[in-house]
Length: 392
Image (cartoon, rainbow, N blue to C red):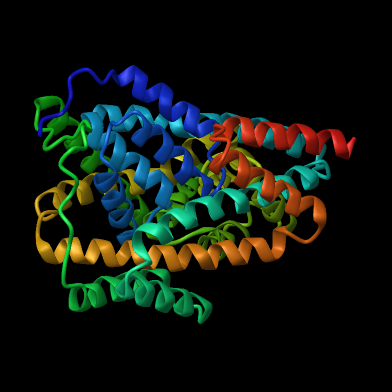
């Protein structure tokens, strides 16, 4: 199926800009699903195949899923512009917060916002988890894989190892795969092979190789060190904030001494109330090292590897996606994701739902998203406004 010519790149960019305004943690998945599937830009099957694919290599999963989706919808240029617009709101907000922090050094006002956001994210994740259970954890194979994945997460087994084990197990035990629904009228893409696409891929590959060479050479200077440090983190950062945080702390606090441990912790807190992936904390670090130029350099260096990996993975995956064993592996990975999502839900809920007010915020977000069908932008804005009022 060829790409649909009526999808305006501007429309896609504006859609991802809107997602970037409400992209808090795992709640990004709900907003991305609602936007892409609601506009019928991709079929549910293709979107969820992408969700399984992006868990196989380093990078923030939701950023990678956005890159995959934008590329499949209308090609390389769309993907580049869409992901720039996706990160722009969180980048600008983090720059502003960094300026306030390093000028005044007081972030006590963040606490009530952080508590409300964390609680509302629990409600949104619950909504997503229920949908995934209905689709991937009702058969005995799905229940087995999701349960084993949940148990392995409790045992602190690497998430990437769990994904590979789930793929292998599903190829062995899943015997039947349903064909995609024939009546789904979604705008799909099969290839993007124009000259502009080739130039874009070539330039991206050259930049990636150049950054690797720069990392090996390790030139002196704060900007070069910042670039190579953020690039290394982005190139190997599997998983979520809990797995990335130690690597980032080692580079920033222990090796380069750009931040004190307290400043690093405050930067993490600022990142939590900022829409966007956890790696947006790199902007805070870059701002401390060399102001606004450093913040832009850090953001580019830490997210660029994920963008490059996703383009390569998407091109490779498109050639094997119809293989029966690949389909079984994808289904197994999504079943594993269901169990891993339950672990995330319990982990966040254990720390976030410590008082009746937090429980109310979680219930509000769950009801608003699942039953009232409210956009996440309004759900979070209402919660943050009331949190500030209560704090004052």
